[in-house]
Image (cartoon, rainbow, N blue to C red; front, top):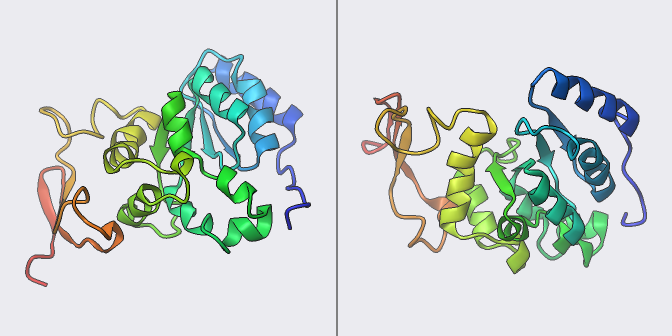
Length: 214
């Protein structure tokens, strides 16, 4: 219910100590934070670091202030656009957060506009990135929506950057891994991106899936 609060799995003082140790070691931290207070307290510790591409996983409920802080701190927002399926009217977020605050969830368009770094994944609910792209392109509000280009970039180049793999993955360039999928139609021209079929999958330059004969 909207009047309930989440629980700390790791308390803020422990997080602050962990961040200090990770930062001293020159490592990257990935912090699981969903609600606005959890995100704020995590940012309190990350804002004083040297910036090793620390990540906040999910970062679902965001105020305007938190969006500005995330962008200014250069923290990677590792988000799941497929979760926007729950932000529709009468969805899970309306039930748990209230109808008004459901529009405060997964404000991916607002993050993009603020200059935050986005890296998309699925959390396996469901796994298909085309479903996630479809959900964010048709987001319930402009602040929750992205273009096909920006959504695709967050799944590809954004994910590679978050994993320190941008020199090897994330874009199709000479010298990088030839990892790509061939789709049956263009997401830029489709009215139902989630239902686009994958025709081929190439990994490391090798054809590993060929659906043209199915």
